[in-house]
Image (cartoon, rainbow, N blue to C red; front, side, top):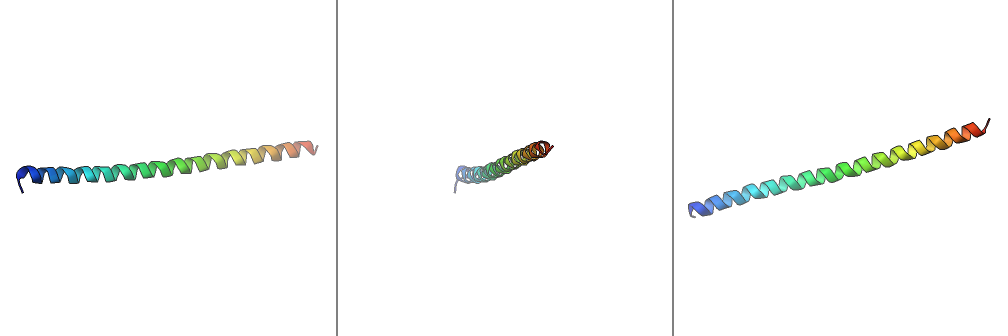
Amino acid sequence: MSDFGEWADSQNKKLDHIKDLLNEIIEAHEKMQLLLSEATIRSQIERGVKEVEDFLGASDC
């Protein structure tokens, strides 16, 4: 193989590795977004339940 062919193969391998790393970053980011969304929803539910409990407790008086 010519020097250029070897160089081109080497560059393609490097690009494939970079592509794989970027895909891993994207997957991790998507998982983090999902976890944050779940945490936000859970927090909103807990706050809503607390407000209802406080309201019901106040109406007992």
